Every structure is written in structure tokens, then in C-alpha cells.
Image (cartoon, rainbow, N blue to C red; front, side, top):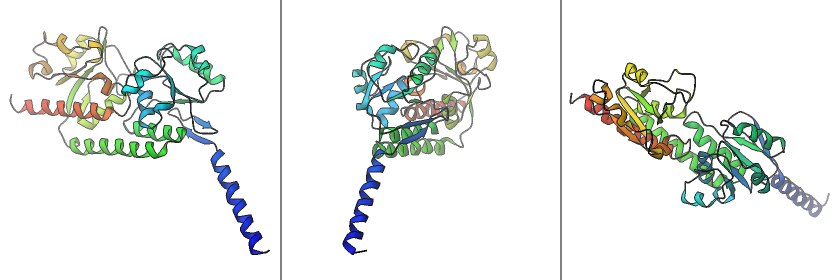
Length: 297
């Protein structure tokens, strides 16, 4: 074979390999372990949860979100995305009209049946539900693969992992603090050990007094909290609810006696997105205050 012919064949092979790589399917597993496959990077994405919207922006795909549910309000650019309903009720016609090539969903309540319908229409669906802090960076990384934005997603995921690792190292040896996490006050909602928020507590040395309950977001009683006698109580500031003032009439409770009734921004902890770094840091700092107050009593 002549050298020129051999070089031409090599060139042709390289072109074919490049073309194949450009059209190679992208496959990742979602948080259910299901394989999600796209023939090319997603260009039109629908987000079905506020935390999903934040994850997509972190992965470098904010400009590709063509529809999002209510309360998808971070970052600021997310407020301009057209709304397609809530995480409980989706406007199916609007979603289909948007012609998404990827839907990133959070399975919750009545929306599950609608999500199944969309799946049967052949629209690829990635289920996002991190239950551990490590899952946040994993979601950013996998969404980056589906979007073809690895150059943004990989460093973002690495930074999230590093920040959580630093917090874990800082508070790993701190004495435990038993706490009650109050999501809502009427009825009195909390989160169990299956929630990602409990993993944030673990990083800070916090112990969830209701970790053993089977339901992720159980309703509990005032009497149950009084009996457990937590050393600290956290209420979320989300929608001006979940106020901790309701515990002030119980001065014998340790959290009240030690002035450990804390308010924390619920959006930083109740959404399993990158801002959980800030939420976890805030919780850690408040729990450290609770430890310091032991010394002054």
C-alpha cells in the first residue's frame, strides 16, 4: 500500500470516528437507578421542582430550561422561566407544547401519575431526589453529562464536594446536639432520618430526635416534642411559617431554657440543591452556639 493511500485511509477513519463520537448516545442513571439515554445533549429542558432548577443552573444548563414549576426562583434568572404548574399539578398540554428533549422530575404526590404519562409519550425523564449530601454533586455532574456542559458541571460538582468535606472535617469531633427540625407549625411537620436534611445535621454533629420515624415528612405532636426534650429547635423561615415562638410557653424544655430556639432559611435546607452548603454551614454555626451555652449554665 502506498504511503499516500495509507494516510488517506487514516484520515478517513479519524473523520468517521469523530462523526460517531458526535452522535454517540449519552446515558446516565438517575436517582432511581434508571438509565436515561439521549441521542444528543439536551437543548430543551423542563424542570419539575425548584431544587431541580437550581441544579440545572449549577450544571451550566440554565439557559436551556424552557419551563419550570412554581417557586423556581433561584438564581434570579430562574424567575423569568415560563411556568408549567406546580410540583403537585403540571399543565400537561403546556409541557408537551414546549417539546422538551429532557424532563428533570421530583416524584411527589399527585404529579407522579402525570410524570408516568410523560414517560409513556417517550420523553426522557431524569428523576432527581438526593437523599444524602453527596447526591447533590452527583446530580450536578450527571445533569452536566446530559446537557453536554461537563466543563461547567465537573468543577461545580467538585467545589460542592470540597465544601461539604470541609464542613464535615470542621465539626466531626464536636459533641452531639439533639435537635428538633420544624418545617411547619400547623400542622406540626418535621423531617425524619430519610431526609437529606438529617444528613446535614450529621455533618454538624446534630442528632434528629425523630430520625427513626418511617415517613419522610411526618406530622408530630407538641407533646411528642416535649417528651423528647431537644436541646435545640430549628424553625424554617419559609413563607413566614414554622415559627419557633410556639415553644416559648414551655420554659422547662431544654431548648427554651438554654435559649436555643433558632430560625433558619428553609430554602437553604429544604431544597436539595447547591445552596445546601450555605444552609448546612448556618446550621453548624447555630449548633455551635448551643454548645457554647452549655458552658454558661
